Length: 541
Image (cartoon, one colour):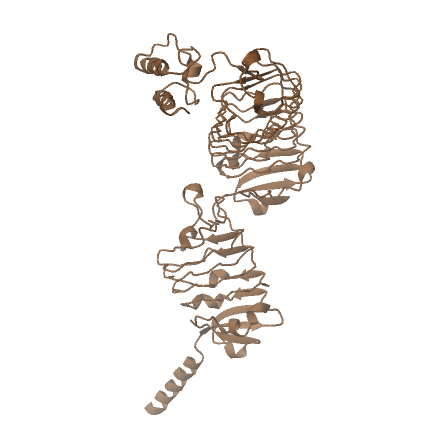
């Protein structure tokens, strides 16, 4: 009796062992789906089943070319019990793949090798928020060639702390973008950017799924384009668009004249775009932009074409813009034909190198305050003020043009412009192209009476008028010489002495406060004195 019971128990254990759960994948050609299971039903599955190997050359569906037919990948709930140690080449070159389902059932806590896992997939988004990568040492070419991939969501389990091999991890992921706007950089294709994006201070290609994101939403019913920064994108009515960075046209670029209203939601103040390139290009029916104060531009480097051909806008107050990092403002207000009030006070243009076509065809501007512009790095001013018919006077006395090479057509067609004020940092020494610079400026008169001459429309007369002996079209601005603290029309050691005495004794007697503001940032302090002394030593600001 005892032996019989023992035999039955042995048979039962053998049967249970034979039916023990195993991890495997099954491809069913009828629906072109690859499904991952961890159960004891492998023998009953329709389709072709595959072992989950750790082979460097990949799993069976890779070796028999089944991968090229897969359109859906599904992780069955049973697969949550599996503990694979390698996912090498699991989804590589699945260029027909449309979606993953049940990725949360893939437990990666024991995985050490994720090399080439998603290489050359055509998906635009990957949700890896359930991934635990604490044990992973190899992420070599993990996402390489995913040229359509824009977003990778990861969670708290994502880490690259153990990774020792990650070369080419993001190679040619040209559309990838982190949650703070970091875009693909061919110099950073390894694991150095394989973390949640921290913006310019800590750039990364990955996205926190629970973090707010910047996007724009167009609703055709009211012709309104609204900028948001929140987690509600999927619930918005209308069409939503990513906020691109760099020099690419925004997703809403083709809306143009369809847009009648532009609004910045208060939450957008948390967004940090790095480019506003062509944001409102050709929005010819927009008359105003609401709540622009919620646009934080502190990380923006490219404002080219931002308001180009917004020919119905009459007033723009951009005094709140932080432009410290902007390098290009070309075409920024081009074609704003009805713009009559433009407030740029407070702008820091010290990083700008390109201002060509900036105010082209701003026909309605009768005044333009650029007295605080720092142009020390600008190399291109081509057609900067061309056809500004309304300007009668223009003050460029703050301009440092030492690096400007192209002034072609700079003031062309400014037919009512009578006076251009210039300062001691205006020079054309680096200019190599200046044709048509003053063409059509028929009302222009220099400070000593030199009148417009159609035979001299290039940079030859682009200096402060010296009368008949040295004719020029510009006028020196009284009291407007940077560094001329004592107002004697020259900058020398006596100015530095007076400025230092003022800082020590707070006695403003005899001081030209405007000229003493050497750093042009407002207020007089030790920085101004330092800049003045450096100017005296080096000959430039």
